[in-house]
Length: 339
Image 1 (cartoon, rainbow, N blue to C red):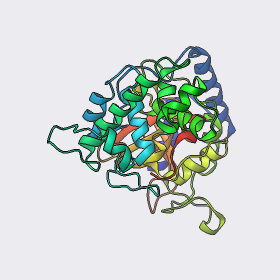
Image 2: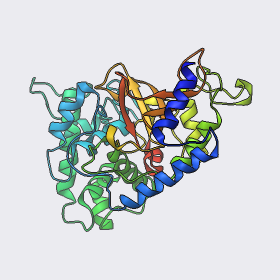
Image 3: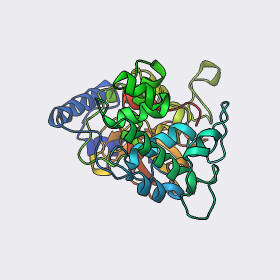
């Protein structure tokens, strides 16, 4: 009875008088594109604040403070760099011997590391030193390239990746694929860490992702399930959302807490069908997210909830509701694979 009630509730709230089927999907398509027309002038970036929970609570104050160190930097841009470099892991070491949360090479740290917390030490492993050092180094590079044509933040990031001399010589972001991709990734990730200053453009892939999820209603849950034939076509929560967006040409990471960074974050009253909705026991840290579903309207989502349950409609307004992401193609492409 509980599940049938949930399905009926969706239709009552959504104003649909049809059963499960393509009628619902087409209703969503129409709704999404009506909203798209109304929001054609919306933006997906802006402001110098941070999106809710995007930065782990342990580092939020540092990122907010040091991300405002110079005009070329912002808290969201600094957060995007740190996430790209280390996934917020303060103990990681790269194959190139880049160390800590900001992934400094020891030789670079020797000349650019600062004592961010004033304890008399410059510790490459301590985020209280490494995060301020990353911001300080960014702003130093911004000064080097301030007279170069183009966007100063883009040029700063290019200098971080390829060196200031190459940016100055090229009179902008150099024609190096690694550097151009680095700049594009960070600027796309920035959208995920910034608190939006206005409404966010709708996703044009929303209806397709919902159609896939809807076709899986009633499928038993499987921990670690990706829907493969050997798994009986079963999914867990993030396996379902990943597969749904793959059908519309967007590749998401496998786990829910990384999927959170695949685009900007609409507020609860701005949710649209196709948004990913997330749940956590720690509402201050996106790295603690443990569940994800696809919003379908009327306060409901399609999700794969847990072992012993099936893919179904569930309400989103629960005490562990964390937030939402409007998935974008660039945002998904920007996500690192090693976090």
